[in-house]
Picture (spheres, one colour):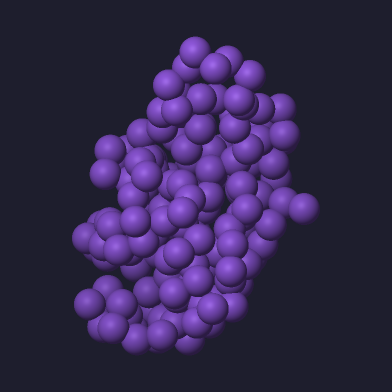
Length: 156
């Protein structure tokens, strides 16, 4: 079985306009939501073999909370920063893991979630977690098919 979790980074802080977008940290709500969402994903039974994350501060900080919850290392990938849906899915597939997590940004996250859910997920709010499962053993097969199951969990 191939499983994928998409995690949009938690709410970021817009307080310091001098910071480049890549360097924006999480705000208080983001630091509160991320560990809660990680715990809820763990309760669902999903266990990532790999956590792929954008290099942006807000994404890698969010990924850090999930890494701590699952004891899974983070693989930082520059190409995930601002990536379109196709790049996000390709990164998961190329990881070779049967259970992959991708932590990144919109609009790519919402686009991919919408595609994989057949339009059931129209938008991924900050710190949303969408999971997808295919009854297949290889990514090449899985990505050619609609998922057999999907879920969406949001912090609000």
